[in-house]
Length: 406
Image 1 (cartoon, rainbow, N blue to C red):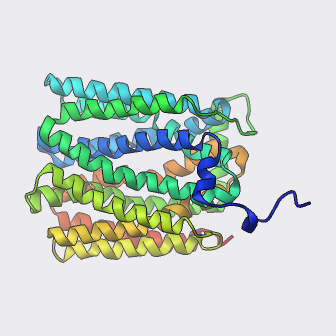
Image 2: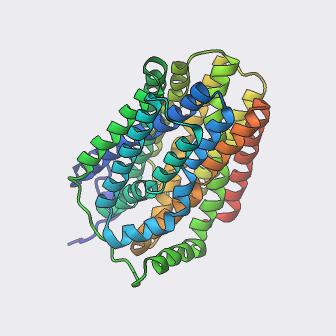
Image 3: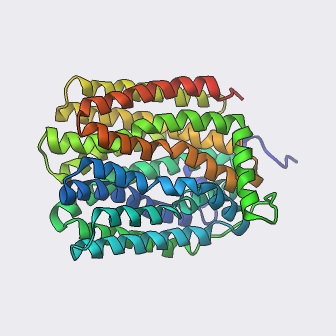
């Protein structure tokens, strides 16, 4: 009798994944919150451009809405390994609910100076690693290994679905109801996500912990740095995300300032990336990514850089939509390779701490890229695009050079 059948004999379908206990609940909560996340980003940018008339403030607010949370991510990871995932995910969702409601009320009463907006989003960002890392590290604990590609495909698809739905809704809310109402509605979505995730299990991995939270957090940093794969991902993905952060600011500026279209058009243009990304993620999620991860990372990075370079030729609507479609298609294999190689090459007992540090290391480029783009694009949109192109090409080289083949 075969106790552990080879992977080829196991049911690795999406149906089998959704049959796993509590996976549906986790994915539903994750999806609701993820729709809210790009809505927050778009709402902040559009609100800053509308209320304060400042591209630089849009970039700075985006930076502070992300970066402080990245700094405390090692502590967040240690908390996740100590206390489990679900309760801490709920905590972050409730913080998001409260902060967005506060921004909405203050904006509605014209009592929201720029410095206070930045302060609120900075404080709210401190708990963000609890949900982003908590959910990402929860999946490999409840999903069998042979279903990881499928789970990561749905994980990636969740982001692109959020890109399809979130930005158009957020842009429409800002355009028709104002930024204040938009923030309040987005905040309520996180409250719903908290209610849904409350029904999920909270398994604890067999983590190697000390008696000190700070020591555990420091050990998570050391483990991540000494893991060649996580270190290589950190450098390559963070550089790539400098481009992603740049485009977060550049795309709305092209639509609003160059094409003279409304806020709703910003959301619809971004949604194109989500549609193509969803199709790509489902297709590549059916493939075994083992021993293909570096190629699935480097080729899309370079391809996205080439696609962005097209915008240096001419910034018309058709070309912008084409670039968004190409970047969505290429993000599918990139995300699946990133998620799966990190799961395969991380000791299960370190998932909370290692994932928190690794994800924050990877993500740090987005707030930095947004801040730089806000300043550079205020003088030249082409210069900001050029920065993004160069970062994509450098990241492709780093992926090949720094990530071990096995």
